[in-house]
Length: 175
Length: 123
Image (cartoon, chains in turn orange, red):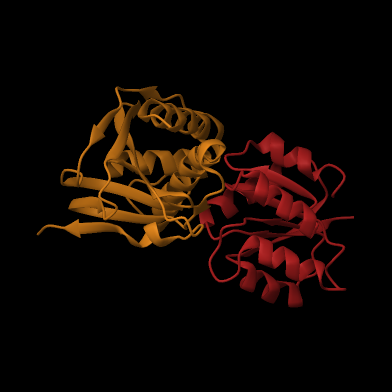
């Protein structure tokens, strides 16, 4: 499995989710590899753990403003500020995007498990994976805002699927 | 005759979207009940007689496949059609759901038309 294949599977899954659930087209930017933790950022991040012969984490992130716009379209209700419904909708978008990615990935890796999504909203936080792998980052533009998908994958143990990785994504907050 | 429906999903957003799709579908719809997982769904069924269940798979406490297994093992609920609506697109999960007795399987993300198509013949 090549990095380009991971980028492409991510792109297809994002396009499918946005066009089906939100009736929106996304513009994909140049994908890249990021080592270690993400730079400190503000906004909303949703994470889902992947486990099987390969393990990892998938995450989506964007500004609070875009998260509110996406939730407003998805739920046909106006959300001027981040609210429980916005976080719930964002977590579900992550579930669908990373779930779609996982379904495509399984053709190569075999069956994988998917954890429940975790959503973080705040300022000046970083995310990192304890798997000591790199993040594959695919940036997009939608409604005039940046939207990113991060995928971290590493070969798992031979003894079958575990959702271990879902517990190994750390979020740290700087004050 | 109007049919009551139970929507089982841990995401309030998805429950809201499915409720909207059901209300827009040209079907004889009665009450819509909601549950956040299999445990809540079984509790809801003790007091609410429904004719159709839409259920997610990945949920806390009791997942959709465990819930489906419990329903199909029950003489009271085994005849109620259950449509799985889930991000789980793997063949393994689809086969498991079919073997347990699911009446249909829709992968998220879904369109309103895909849901409506699955309702044909069930309501």
